[in-house]
Amino acid sequence: MRDLDAALAAWRALLGDERVQCDPDTRRAASTATYATTEQVAAVLRLTSTAEVSEALRIATERNVPVYPVSRGCNWGLGSRVPTVDGAVLLDLSAMRTITDFDDALGCVTVEPGVTFAQMHTFLAERGARWFGAVTGSSPHASLVGNALERGDGAGPYGDRWNHVCALEAVLATGEVVRTGFARFDGAKAAQSHRWGVGPSLDGLFSQSNLAVVTRMTVWLSPLPKSIQAMRFRLRDGRRLAPLVDALRTLRLDGTLRATASLWNARRAWSVEARAHDREGWARFVRETDGCAWFGLTGLYAPTALMGRALREHAVATLGPLVDSWHVEERSGDPVAGRELLWEHEPAFGFLQGVPHARSLQSAYWSKPADFTVEGDADPDRDRCGVVWCCAAVPLRGDDVARACELAAQVLHAHGFDPMLAVATPTERCASLLPTILYDREVPDADARAVTCHDALTAALAREGWLPYRVAAHRMASIPEANDATRALLARLRAAVDPSGVLAPGRYER
Ligand SMILES: Cc1cc2nc3c(=O)[nH]c(=O)nc-3n(C[C@H](O)[C@H](O)[C@H](O)COP(=O)(O)OP(=O)(O)OC[C@H]3O[C@@H](n4cnc5c(N)ncnc54)[C@H](O)[C@@H]3O)c2cc1C
Image 1 (cartoon, rainbow, N blue to C red):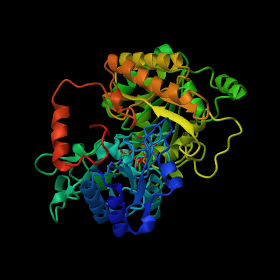
Image 2 (cartoon, rainbow, N blue to C red; image 1 turned 60 degrees about the vertical axis):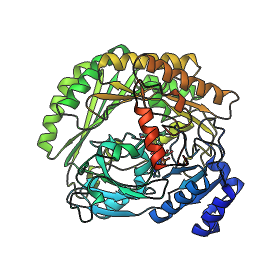
Image 3 (cartoon, helix red, strand yellow; image 1 turned 180 degrees about the horizontal axis):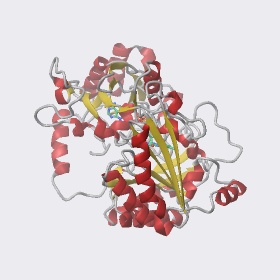
C-alpha cells in the first residue's frame, strides 16, 4: 500500500528537510507543463549523488510511492517536469552537475544528469579543447543526459545524440546500480570508446524508458573542424520540396553532409524572430525573403580548407539547381581556439560548433501578446507558453517527406493552429518531422484544442505509417498498438526490476 508519509520521513532522514520540498510553490511549478496536464507532484527531492538516488529509489519501492526523474526538466513541448501519474514525487537530478571525466585524445566527456549544454561548452572552451558537443534549439540550460535519454536531435555530425553515447550508469527501482557496455568491468580501458561491451547491450533499455534512473553517461564529441561552412538555402515553391529532400539524402549518404540538415517552413522560421500578432513584421518577412516557403541550413565540416572547398563544390552542384537561392559562408582557422571559426556575421557558426544559445527558444513565446516580456531566462512553463511537439519518423525519401509535411499542415490548419513545420536529417536514411503546436495557454479553450490537435495529428501521420519516435509524456496513448510481444516482454522486465512499479509509471511503457 502506498505510504507517502513514511516515504517522506525516510527521505528527510536521508537528505535533510531542505532537500525534500513539499511547499505549494515548488509543487505547483513542478506540476506545470506547456500544455494541459492534471497530474500534481506530491514533493520534490533534490538528489546529489548516485548513492542518494539508489537509496531514494529503494525507499520509493518499499513505500510504494511513484517517482519521476528529471535531469534538468526542460522537456518543453513534451511534458516538462510533470510526472505521468498523479501524486508522484519528482526526483530532481539537476544538482548532479559534475563532468566526471574528459578524454582529450578520444573526445569523450562523462557527465552526471545535471550537466547542461552551456556547462559542457564552457568546460571545453576553458581547456582550449579541439572538441565540441552537439547542441539543440532548446535551452543552453537543458541537460545532455535528459536530451540523450529522450533520443533528442542536435546540430552537427553527432546530432543523432543517442548514437553517440555509451557507458551508462543506471539505478534500478530496487536501488541496484548497473553499468552498460564495458563500464561494468573494473579497469576496462575501452569503457568510454566502445558502445556495446561484451554480451547483450543494455543501453537501449534505458532510453525512453521507465526501467532505471540514469546517473552517468559518456558522450562523444566531434572534432572542431579547420573549415566550417554554413550553407543556407531557400525554396519558393513548396511543391519542389521532394527533389530537395532526395538530394539531401544523396549528400548525407555519400558523406558530403556529415551533419543534420534542417528545413523550416516560413511560419516556423519566422516564429524564432517575432510574435504571431505582428502582421506588419510578417508582411516584411515575406517581402524580404521573396515569399519563400522553405528555409534550409546545414554545415559542411572539413579538416582542411581545401577539403572544405571540394565539399562545397559538390553540395552546391547537387543542391543548387533544386533551390531558389543558396549561400555558403566559410570560416577556416585554428581549431584549437575555435574562436575565429565562430560567428561574426553568420550566427549559425556558433550553433553548428556546439555553442548553445537560447534564440530558438523564443518561438515558445510566439503566441504571447506583443507586449509580453520574458523576465530573466526563458521559462515556457512559468510563462504559460503553449507548446506541443509531434515528432514523427519519416523515411528520407522526398515523396514521403513532402506528403507528411502536407498532411501535418492540413491537420494543424484544420484545428486552427499555424502550420509550423520543421524537418531534420539527423541520420542518412530517416528524417525527423517536427510539426509544432504553438499557442498561448492564457487563451480560453486553447489548451483543449492543442491536445486534440496533437492526437489527431499523431493519428493521421501514424495511419500513413509515419510513427512517432518521441512522445509527449502525457500523450502516451497516441502511440499505436504494436503487433508483437514487445509490450509483454517489457512488462516482464519491468516487473523484475521494479516490483512495485514505482518508477515513472506510464512513461513510454506501462
Ligand atoms: C523552442 C524549443 C526548441 C527545442 N529544440 C529541441 C532540439 O533542437 N532538439 C531536441 O532534442 N529537443 C528540443 N526541444 C525539446 C526539449 O526542450 C529538449 O529536448 C531538452 O533537452 C529536454 O530537457 P532536459 O534536457 O532538461 O531533459 P529532462 O526534462 O530532464 O528529461 C526529459 C525526460 O527524460 C526522462 N529522464 C530525464 N532524466 C532522466 C534520468 N536521469 N534517468 C531516467 N530518465 C530520465 C524523463 O522522462 C524526462 O521527462 C525544444 C523545445 C523547445 C520549446
